[in-house]
Image 1: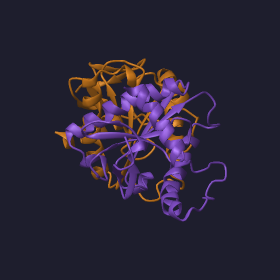
Image 2: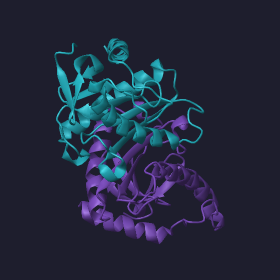
Image 3: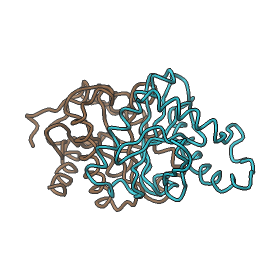
Length: 167
Length: 167
């Protein structure tokens, strides 16, 4: 997939090279600032905010794709568990108003306390918005000094890897 | 549903009166120690540990039921968002080895930091096991003094309420 095609993620255009899985109703794409290696997102192609807004066909397609992607990233990143979560609405921590499943490969001791992974997801969502706003001006983000916004090419390389594994 | 029927949740028998939704492949049931009002669980009827173990029919059925239950508990408990999460495997915080979706109605300010809801889910899972072990001896749990194990009848009453709403 090349970057002449953009996929909508709420208000954010996702370049085709960052999308590694496509079905008629759903897409899997890489993350600007993954919380753990292999942290990816799965969304309906249709730009809808809440999980309740999805049709039955979209619900089934979305979660079947998430199941397939989850098994692939867990194996590929040498993990032994997965966190699968939807922050469905603003009071659940949703910052991009487009349904998305967070898939995180998990390993023993990756977070000192298990819940910290979710705190990191929240920070990531905020950063996604901030980074999208900051990127055009070429600014570096300073919201979380431990993690860097990845380059477009790093993200495309990871997507290419996952795309090959899923074929 | 009466208590002569038990549904398996990993090693734990769930009395029929605590199950408020049943499909051919999935069940919705109330929680021993809900983290927020209306915190319920949805599981496949088949006792499988990991999300990847589910058939396509089970995945679709599970999440369509979760979608329906989520909309119902969000409205019924006066919430405006939902947390939907699977802790898929021990390194993701799973303590009961039977796939289950946590559904939590969320409100503004219900947790000082959004991630604390997940920390509470983790504690709840541990308590579920401890409570199941402790209940026969009639002991009170002391793992989390802020929350009490609910009585069988309180749980059955909540399940009856939700069962009526879902019909």
